[in-house]
Length: 257
Image 1 (spheres, helix red, strand yellow):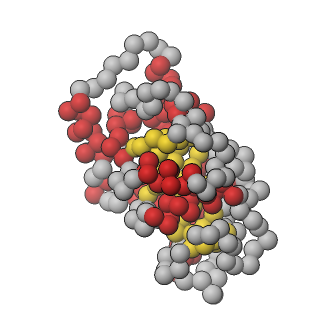
Image 2 (cartoon, rainbow, N blue to C red; image 1 turned 180 degrees about the vertical axis):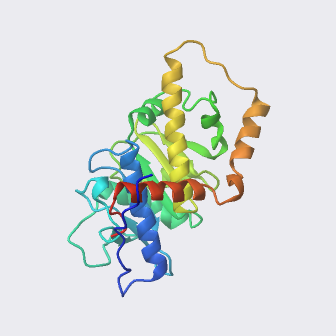
Image 3 (cartoon, one colour; image 1 turned 30 degrees about the horizontal axis):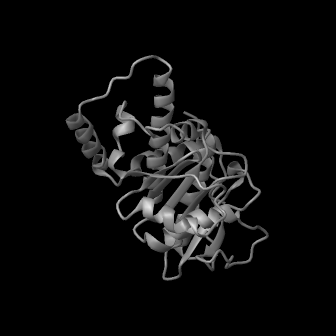
């Protein structure tokens, strides 16, 4: 096994331990999205609420590739999209429109991720959406909603419709003709939900090329979802995310700087 290279740096003196830990995990999320081929040049976004009483969240600096995002260069903004700390970077307005409304209204959700993958957009353009044809596609089936396409996400009026489609009980949205949105109560939870929603879309596109599809009985579909939400004795996604951060460390990724 290749030894891990430690690129971590000490927490800035002015920053709380909780914020720095959030920054490190969020930067790791960006690197993992790039690693698994779910990024889209400098576009898309993953955000996380900053711990504390302020209504602040973190976004990627607009213009950087996901492989360039680090804990220290993430940009802190308020719910109005105003950058609240000194930084040479700016943010993508579409990131603010989509993410700020979720952080404003769904306080149970810490992290929000949005992608434009080939498989995700492909399934989003299908009339039936995500089909219950694989174990992977059943994991979070009751947490998935749909939101119709309204053009580039630059219109603040779209926020109320996006929130209506997310509701109070969904954590995943398939954005029609657009892509995927995954939200988590923790950063690892948002990651694992996005990862397996993406995998389910890839499986579906592959299966549709092979002939007639077989669907499990509804009772089995419900059972698979119930079993998946247990988290195997840990918080949902915690073990997987911790293991993948070790992979990043072995690769020499400098996300924690």
